[in-house]
Structures are given as C-alpha cells and as structure tokens.
View 1: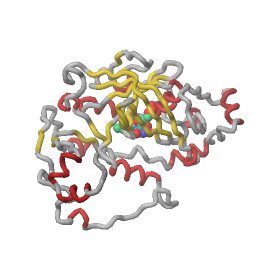
View 2 (view 1 turned 90 degrees about the vertical axis):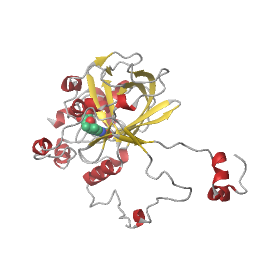
View 3 (view 1 turned 180 degrees about the vertical axis):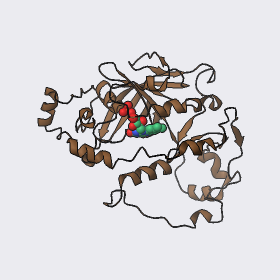
View 4 (view 1 turned 60 degrees about the vertical axis):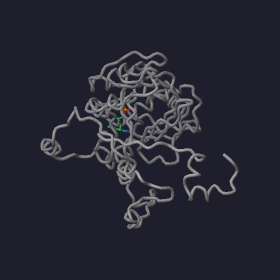
Length: 336
Ligand SMILES: Cc1cc2nc3c(=O)[nH]c(=O)nc-3n(C[C@H](O)[C@H](O)[C@H](O)COP(=O)(O)O)c2cc1C
C-alpha cells in the first residue's frame, strides 16, 4: 500500500554532512517533525493515490517483445571504429559548415511551468534532448544495513580535484527514492559504471521494489567489499567510486501534492577501484574497448559507442599566428 511506505514531506534546506535520521510513519520523531517549522504535513493517502494516477514515468510498452524479436541481434564483438572528425578542415569562425542548413528552422518556445504543460512532457523532452547520459549505478545501505542498488542518469562527474559527482532524484508518488533516503540517512554510496554486458541487470534494478528490498538479488550482480564506506561495490563494473555525501539540495518550493520531494546530491569520492586489465599501467586511463559504456537516451532507448573520432584541444598562443580571425580578436588584448 502506497501510504504505508510514505515517509513524509520533509524539508531540509541545507544538509550539513551529518547523517539525518528519517523517522518512520507513526514514530514519535515523525510527530515531532510534523510540529517542527522545518517540515510540512505528511502527504495524505488520497493525495498520494491521485498523484499515482497521473504518474506515467514507467510507460506501457505494448507489444515490445514482438518488436524486439524482429530486430537484429546485439553484436558483442563489434569493435569501436575510429574515424576522422565530422569536418576535419574546419576553420575558426566557420560555425557549422553546412551552408546554413542547421539555421533553417525557427525554435518553438516552451515555458516548462505552464499550467497546461504536463510534467511528463518535460520528462520526455529532457531525457530525449539531453542525451546520451551516463548511468550512475548507486549502491547504498539504510541504517539497518539493508542493501539497495539502483541506476540514475541524472548523474555526472563534475570535477576531478576533488573528484565530485552529482545525482538527481526525481519526485514520485508518496515516497522519496530509497537511494536518496539512504544517502540522506547514512551519507555513503558506491557509484558503479555500467557496461553493455550489464544493462539488463542494471535496468531490472530500477524496479520500484519496496523499501528494504535488495535489488542486488533482483539483478543477480555480485558484491565486492568497499574500503571507506559500508555499501558494496558492483564486482562486474569496470570502475567503482566509493563516495560520501557533501551536500543535498531539496526542491521544497516545487513539491506537488502527493509527490515526494525532488533533490540533488553532491558526492565526493573517497576511493577508486579500477578492474585490472582495463586501464594503462598507472591507472590514469580506462580503455574504452573494455569499458563499453552505455548511455541512456530518450524514451526507453540506450546507446552504445561503436565509433569515435578525436580532436586535439588548442592553445590560444599557438593558434593566433595561424588565424586572421584569432589575430583580430587578440589585437590589443593583454598577453596570456
Ligand atoms: C537507466 C535508468 C536511469 C534512471 N535515472 C534516474 C534518475 O536520474 N533519477 C531518478 O530519480 N530516477 C532514475 N531512474 C529510475 C530509478 O532507477 C527508479 O525509480 C528506482 O526504482 C529507484 O530505486 P530506489 O527507490 O531503490 O532508489 C532511472 C532508471 C533507469 C533504468
């Protein structure tokens, strides 16, 4: 029953890196929270049921099995081809060298908050338009030690010094994502990479299992011990990152009736693990042929990399003497 798993609509404006314990329904601490100025009332059963009705993130896929059966097999042995870049003779100031073809259409303006625009349209637009997205496969535990494993593609590495990551947790009817709850309560996780050969198991672990049910068992993936955090690493992944939560931002001002809070979590790495045989000698570069990353695309699509191209980055001081455009822009500017 949805209401049984509802954990309330907590509001934490800031998060001070100490784990916050999340009270359970009916517990004295939840009642305290209800009274406190930092929390609103728990979503009612009716609100949650209404939200559930209009929540269409997991779509009916109709005759997907039939369609899938007609498609060519996945070629596991396909090598990654390296080609020339799309326009190898591109010059400074040239934009897109397609004789204006990419400027032919106007843009359609959208207010994402318009009262007649359903949330699902923003969801579909964003996951199809911001693609491919890497999948952060997060292993967490709750304070009782119960394990969780789920994929998130509102995910990115955002710096290397210190190594920092961000994960976005969407609202859903009634209860926050279990991974988010665990991060908030324990402050720890392992971020695991997703390779092609793992995708069925990873996708399966996104099922909306009840709080406390381990998706390790749903997926059949294997645990490896971590060094600096409690949650296990995914042994099948090429790259595991142990991490601790450094900040949380909850979008309290946008919470809809019956829906849990949406939040983003900032995670700082505490340890790296790279599978032997997948990187160079000093473990500074992972081989793409070994990583075989999967990107999430729009709808229910995933993408693989079968072709790459290279493009060196340039230095202003080297390029100015070679380009009239850069020389003009550089004229009179202080030396770099
Ligand atoms: C590839 C993939 C990427 C996903 N990305 C996100 C995401 O970025 N944010 C999110 O809230 N849910 C995302 N989901 C859905 C969650 O995985 C799903 O809600 C899951 O049940 C959450 O598990 P938990 O409640 O055990 O944490 C994604 C699902 C898949 C299959």
